[in-house]
Length: 188
Image (tube, rainbow, N blue to C red; front, side, top):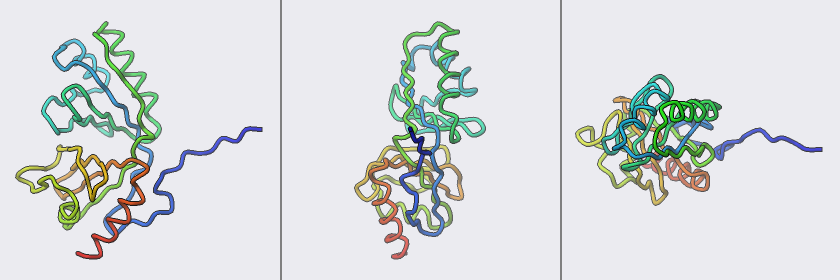
């Protein structure tokens, strides 16, 4: 007899500070392609419903789906929980329809969990453990960066001016990051 276990977040049962919550099990696709290839970039835009960002550390999107620039030829497409197969199939159909040059689409949904921080002290909390400049003059809504938070590799993504941030964290670091956030929040 086989047992099918329901997907669980690495943050199940982990306490987060006030102003923080998990956005569990988001769909995440790693997309790699040549940004100089206009046909491939156009096909991606048709498949997603918006263009991939071409400026470093920026985010584009439409509705509940966003694309984060991770490198010159790499993006992380993020969507609602359970949509990874549909997003991947839609992109593959668009690439096939336009007969584009090679593109890589890999489902990495289990590779990171998401912690959302919001409120007037969210930036101050992150700045206590993050080396990048999060001041609004340098980092605002629609910006993202691969960085470290208290020594843990994360992607920081600012979603609103409030500010509201999403931290995309590898499962092996989630308990550590949650504990660090609790400790840092207690000190503020």
